[in-house]
Amino acid sequence: MKFKMTPSKLMIFLFAAVTLALPITTIALPKLERSENENRTLAKFPTLINEDKLENAENFGEYVDSVKWDYITIRDKNSFMDDIEVYFSDHLAGRETWVQTKNKLEALIGKQEINGVYTINDQMIQVFKEYDQATVDASIKAMNTFAANHSDLPCSIMLSPTAQEMYFSQMPKYNGYLSQKTFIDNVYKQLQGFTTIDGLSFMTEHKDDYLFYRTDHHWTSLGAYYGYCAAAKALGYSAYGLKDFNIETVSSDFHGTLYSKTLDSGVTPDVIDYYHLKNNAPKITMTVFDGAKETVYDSLYVRDYLNVKDKYSSFTGSNQPIITIETDIDNGKSLLLVKDSYAHSLVPFLANHYSKITMVDMRYINADLNYFINVDEYTQALFMFNTVSFAEDESLKKIQLTK
Image (cartoon, rainbow, N blue to C red):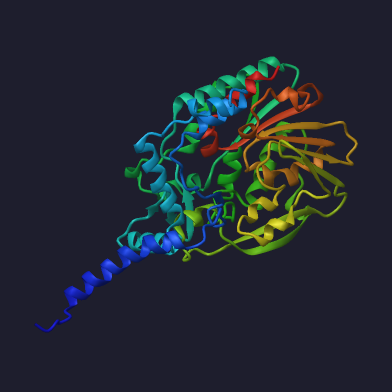
């Protein structure tokens, strides 16, 4: 009987071909160690050996050839298969194309929230729908302990809204999006020994301006400027006006963290600006400590990052445990800045008022902070976070260890 190709047979053939070719191609292709688009390290092929137990034995001096088999165990099957799934997902041939196609299909059927990103009016928004109250309570308790332990140190806090709060009235209530104003107010009420900074009011007054990147979860330099204006009064000085700065546009094709989650090329790429004080700009020395070594810069901008996808990291560099900024301003004022990455584009404004600023990221510090710095040397402390990162931060509770 003569074989006849029909549309249904063709579909079955194509499906079988793709099903077979995809895993074979995935295995055969060279593996990347890192995804620049997602700014993260990709999964390595898992091993059946429980390496954590073996590594612990070596660390404690228990490992010798004669007893090494006592520490080698086979991993749980379910755990191993989960890691295999993650590995193939990370290295799937044409992965970004598949993800982009999936997201486009979801958008075509009217879905506006994809991978935790809501898109409206050419604006991607990192959604804030839930948080762990115990985590927030632990952070508040630790901060209150810090303020009590350093009662002579004036402490301030600024929780910045994110783009969601600017678009909150336009987002569907049935999706469970939370009011960041309510969250900020509740946190502020529970803090003791802190001056609270109302950044939200400043942002709301200018909500029609370019305050947040369209494709990234950070605020723009203009958004950071208004955050600086809100903080200035609490910190004891007058903010410079916008007319006091020269604005340098350093990129007009920035695709940020939210783009990485959606791969939606329909949203306009972002512009990155640097604000330079026109007159009496201080001379800057920035020392970045990554936990092992120090790197010194003569600027707050690490321009090498403008050549890669993670362009926002050009503001003071990527997240690091401690960054120390020294200026030639001889006023004796020094600021301890406990922060998330929103502070990186805020610091270029704050640096115009201090002899020294030390930025501390508790996510990368696992020892008593006094091991690295002397808190008593500072004249002010500022805790600066965006609302979403503060709600999720499990590391801030470590600040209470500092006495």
